[in-house]
Length: 444
Image (cartoon, rainbow, N blue to C red; front, side, top):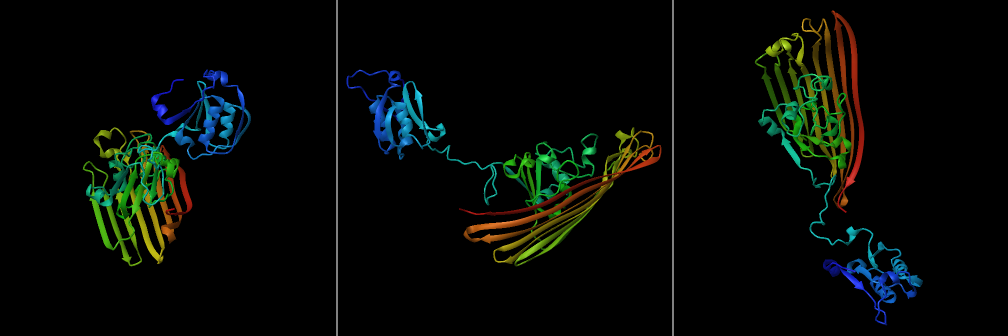
């Protein structure tokens, strides 16, 4: 048989010649049965004894049999039967190639020698402290957004390159999914890679909150920017750790743990062509002490709508037609932590938002929406509370217990007008989340 030189270097060929000096072809020897009485011993010694006794070629790598013991081989057996008896109870198998008997592991991968390229372990999902993810993480701080002139998360969603700006974004107007039925309550959801808001997992301080309306996204515009310390964005699939709702990626809004003092901001602006008069007032306050601290952020945001009458290029529509809805929103966030005893820490974060708006859709260009049209008054109210307890254990272990209760409700009162006669309607979307999570981790 032909053996590659590279293979010969790693394999041992054991052959026995007949005393007459005339070799019997290997295929002819395959069915010859001989008597064997070999004890349990070093596997390499047993395989060599079988080769000498049977006159068959037996191939094996030295490192494969090193340190292994063979089972006893007794009885009248063919060479192949004798080798299989010797391998009984091991993870090695016998393979016949061109008349030779080859002993190898069940998986060829087991014969590979470790080297620098095969020593690396890639972690696709981990909750171990300090464990690095193979996916790149983008960190955006609150200060960086403020320096860029961003005042809320609707603005952040438009400048994040990995985020699809359509869908649930109050700055996107138009029919269909952009500005139409898809965004019924003027919310902002993140949609990494354009796979849908339900494929981007949005977390607050590392935990889930209730979804918004009907598209299973999280309304990030309900969080005041002043309450956030930074935003961590993993714009790659993270379903190995978080599940199928993280196929597009993960966005984690990290809240400020505490704050000392009082900071207030005010903003006013308007569009030069009319409409979109904006005013925003926010305040953040809190306190720190030796064993803990807290932070409270409150934000009020009001903007008037942009109507068809406010733009020259939409004068062919009825002036009451809403292009971009106005809104009034109040939102608040609380975050705090307290060291109860040495090694025991209590944390809590809570969020609340109330938003109200009006949208008008005129059915004709000659009559107001309150005559022939649809007028919607969506109202959104959401809240979430997450207390958690963290305990430092011996041997550098930590344990945690966390619970979240969250609700997001969109209540739409509508009026469908036909020749001035109103047919009232009401539609409610309510999403609830109740979650308890416990865990412990540390070095082994």
